[in-house]
Length: 175
Image 1 (cartoon, rainbow, N blue to C red):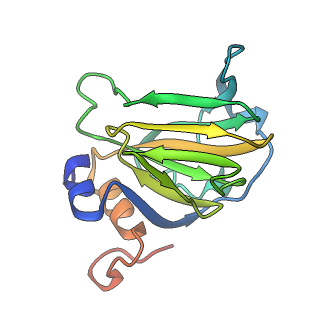
Image 2: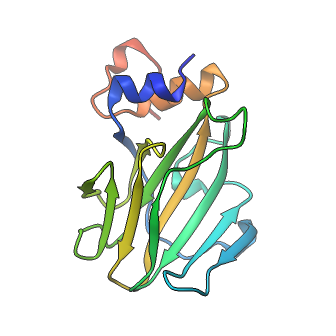
């Protein structure tokens, strides 16, 4: 079974996946809780009970905190490393999907001191133990986040089968 360190050692710290999600409005029926920051760098985060079908994350894998994030011009995430709960540090991988405004002139995302250019609507597995941060320069910038828990073989196999250029003849076929 994979641990995040194994996954990132094999595939890199920012891994494009062969799954996509469209830009969409907030699904208020899925909101578990919301967090709005009214300070400098404000952003709105809606943590869902489950990921919407349109995100293409199967319900039979182990994940938590599917989050819809809305940022406007001037919003930002300060440089940080994510800290997972004790005991979860060795099992969680963050997936991100930037649905719009992906050019660095619209939204600049930096991981490990490198500016990243995301493909709109594509999911990426990211090593959030590295320093990362983002600055928004355009209103209504939407991205999604979801933490995979690599605690079972089905979730590990699904993640690996979604890695770009994965040899599909050796594992599960992509759905």
